[in-house]
Length: 275
Ligand code: SAM
Image 1: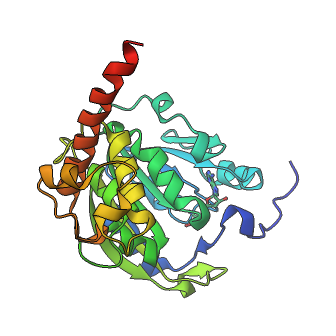
Image 2: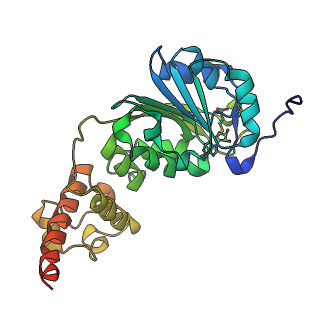
């Protein structure tokens, strides 16, 4: 094989490589990987975090999309018995093929910012396999993930992620920690999937629908934004004040609305099933 060419960061893969040793050390300290654990790194890039992860002797699987980075990753880590490289798109990766036990996988990634939200939703579909997730994300996204009801950051992302996980904002990372530096500030977040959901919805797809509909027009009252889904009486019946704005409701209230909709959906399907 010819000598490796220096890699030029690609914008379309969201490549901003970490080079600040202090920040890398702090992230690894927050993850604190241990021998025998199961780690999954998304987007290892040139291996800034990979080195510390694999050095812990945990079993590490990595998924990297950019084919040009594969020879470098193989050269650096390919001979280590606890390292497994998958070339491909994390958005299409079937996490069940990793053969991890219940709540075993520890997922890590300095994620490409353009796919971070859909990727988190893709991972949440396998929340039962995941022990925790540590991600570097755009700071505003971390603020939305960790938000509490009542403020401008509280919305669909906060609710759907906190439905599944406990969320912790860990620390801020400035653009200078990366090469090339991104135009935005970043932050590290920890997501820990609940072993038992605190507010399980009868039908999570309906929760998703109610939340999406409610926040489509976040300045309006619930009575107005939910008009297409339920009546003012339905809202009052589950002890929710229809004159509030969606950002004033906590997860438990959204679940009560979704469960009301679930009951109605069952009711209205009865006549049509009889013809
Ligand atoms: N972890 C490295 C670091 O901290 O320096 C690289 C981080 S860089 C922000 C994001 C990495 O994710 C890049 O290596 C990029 O090629 C990779 N990537 C982008 N889209 C991906 C996808 N859909 N699946 C897997 N990896 C992806």
